[in-house]
Image (tube, rainbow, N blue to C red):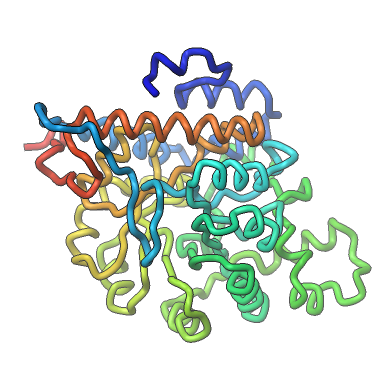
Length: 376
């Protein structure tokens, strides 16, 4: 199907149009939470600008009549090279929240990463995803028993890996949210995994007498762990056989440490510009990290992935896969149909871009196909 064949749809095509559509339909607090970054939002902007500074150099007169968008990750076949990033609190965008996103992912065959702070439970999302690759993202609670319970539930439900977010000892300095006096959990979003967890209930709500406000206070008291260290990752390796992926790596030393420890993957990420403002973009950090780990672990990257060409650039720098965040969340404003449209557009865009750059698969891309603009 060509882009001309797609003109009959009522949904937007571009990221910017989806963003505007979402802004028109959501209240200021909810949209601000999704769209904004931390501090002055320089990192949020740099995530996009990094892709603009990297140019593709196509090769022509290639037989591209057959193309393959699939990749292998963690000894598992993935039909597409992008995964849906773990985005919490999706019920603030649409009542069906994560269920709608997971249904769209399953329909399109796109891997999905479920957030700890989802508005649907670990089990509900896994049931929807079935045999399509899906992963559980862990915000490590400041209660080891609850953390272990989440991990064991993910194992039992059939998840294919644990994605540990390692860049969030605290929430970043998010001026937009503070100005709007908004945090999604205050609406009741993002608490499903806690209120369905037997260990959390036993420890914090044993007689089920707490109000929702009191439950949310208990969750917030343990939501982030300020003393999360490499020792916790070693412990995780001891209690689960699932692949372990660390999300939020930017420094080469941390990437080397992860490889030495034997984790299965790292996600080069600055949390979508939502944690520490002024840090390096994932794309700019990627080449040095790929070189440092030397194929010992799978390397994924996120932040600024908007179109098919962005995925080509990431793969040319050595990425094994990428994560898609805000674009599908903007699509969620129209429920499952909107998310499906975003995913379908990206798949078609990627397929077209792959052919035009002159390769049959993403594995064929390397630095011969790219040039940093403004660099010697």
